Each structure stands twice: as structure tokens, then as C-alpha cells.
Image (cartoon, rainbow, N blue to C red; front, side, top):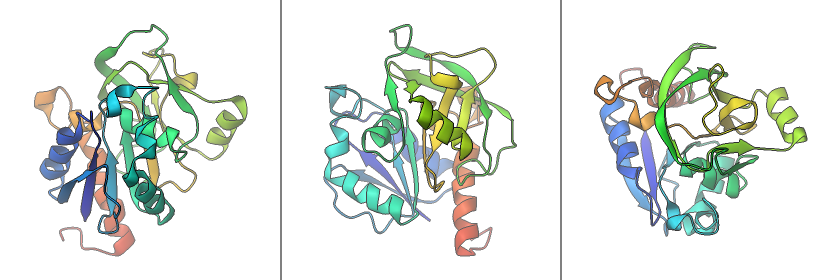
Length: 231
């Protein structure tokens, strides 16, 4: 399996994503610059966190026009796995690959802390190694992570089981509607989330609960391609 980690001017979690793939599942992974016009060689695309283009205009608003995003859209249509994390989630919503938008945190402050998430949907390529309803510990670090959508979109998300993660219990660090921390597209091959699973792949980092997102992707790909489990 081959992963692409996109790199925009201002990305700062690209190395974290690269190392997470390398260290947790040992698969081939490349950094891919934003000017790239061909992603056909990759099975999964990671859109990392950071401050693409300095977050000018608004988070992800400029990155959506990068050459590589045309290829990401093609990859999504082809059923390839796409995971947007933090700024990557913002980019995916700006590009229309996921519904809704990310706006300023309710407290208008940047938040950086560990958060407990509920796995709302474990029937995705990104969560199949978790249990339904499982509580996991994943860090957040964002100033515009407040997920918002209109009532019709929210009803559709619920009807199609597109909510993947929620902030657990009464905790809601940014004011997201219905405590939403991550969603998927209707097809299920594109997921966006504000928390950082790539920062939770080893207990030395405070949690290794993010590791199973990467093993889930590999497991889904192997099932899809009939690959040997130890291949």
C-alpha cells in the first residue's frame, strides 16, 4: 500500500503523518508537494494539519485551489482513501469533499490538549479496528475547529451515519454542533477530523489510540485487494 502526505506552504504536521505511517504500519509513504498533478500511484492520501498558506482569508480557503486538490477530488471519486486532519479537514470542507465548515472556536482561543472521543461509526475504512462507542484519547490543537452545518446537512449526516467521532460526554472544546469531531462522505472513503491521531501512536506521546486509524486503513485496503494479512 502506498500513502501520499500532501505538503502545502505552511503545513507543519506532514512529518508527523509520514512518521505515523512509517512507524505504525510500515507502508510506503511519500511527501507530495501542492503543485503535483498526478496522484494515481497512491492508495491513500493524508491531508495534514498546520497553517496552509498562513490561514489567510480563512483556514483551507487558499489550499483548496492548489493543483494537487484537483487530483485529490479525482482520487475521492475513484474510491481511494483520503484522511484530512485538522487543517486537512478544513481544506476538505473548503474543497467540497466534505459537507459543513470549520469556524472559530467558541472561546476564540487556540486550544491544545488531550481530548476523549467517542467512536460513533466504526464501520469505515478509518475506524474498523475500534469498537462501536469506544472512548479513545486523541489530542487536539486548533483555533478554528468549531464544526458547523445547517439543519438539513446535520439531518443528512445523521441519516447516512456520516458522523465518525464526537467529543465525549459534556466536553466540547470548540463549540462544534452536536459535539462533532469528525465526519465522512457518503461513500465512506473520505474522512475529516479535527483531533490528531498521528500524534497518538505511541504511549510515550500520552496515548497510542490513534495508531488504530492507520491499521484500519491498511486493513481496509487489504480486504479490498484481497492482500495477505502479513503481505
